[in-house]
Amino acid sequence: MHDRYTTFARGLESPVIDGFEIIPDDDADLPEMTRAIYVGGSGSLSVTLASGTTVTLEGVASGTILPLRACRLLATGTTAAHIVGLV
Image 1 (tube, helix red, strand yellow):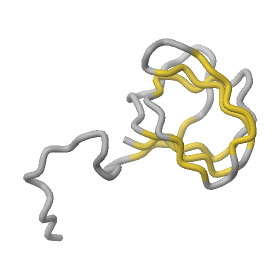
Image 2: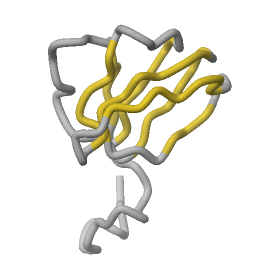
Image 3: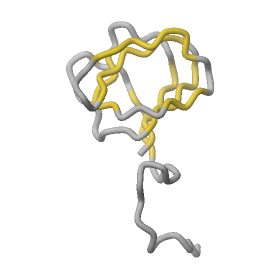
């Protein structure tokens, strides 16, 4: 398939090019720093951001894409489901 944008530099404002399923874990970092997180099932997210700060986001609606640079999604405090890391 032809991709006319392969020679362009990729930045944080560029579209996502990959993703991975996130299973919340209190002890393990994500396999890759995210550019965004997709939430398929509503609830709360307890996330450690790139800065090292951990925050809990309450009431995240199903189908939401959050532009978060995250390194960990904690099981404790996370009730949302079907979470995907976007890179």
